[in-house]
Image 1 (tube, helix red, strand yellow):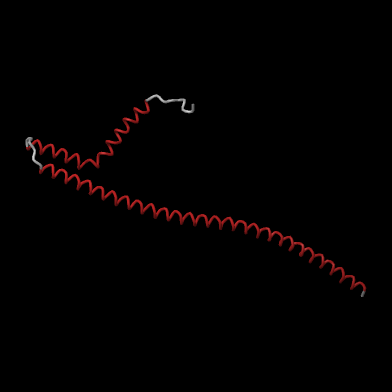
Image 2 (image 1 turned 30 degrees about the vertical axis):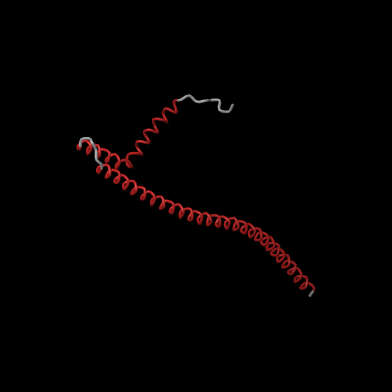
Length: 153
């Protein structure tokens, strides 16, 4: 009977050691799980901040696009208005120019009016090219002028 109690006691000690080992392993795993949980919480905060920032950027970009589109539409409307105004103004001036009395030759006046009509009607289409040529000419002259190298004195 003493041997049976001793064997049972040894079995219980082995069982207790095994359970203690399992318990220590569970404690270590629990600590690692807490560390992993804390790391994931931190990563989630960073990701949520990134999502909020991205979402606000998207909303800002949408608003910016809306206002830019609205401004572009207003610009197109003003362009159309000035285009019609310009041609109405040109037509009015040349109509009055034809209706006024002149002491010159009728055919010469008609030819001059046709040339000026052509220039006035084509003006919006070629003025950009002319301005670029003039700007390029003056810019090339400006680049060739001597520069003051002592600007900081």
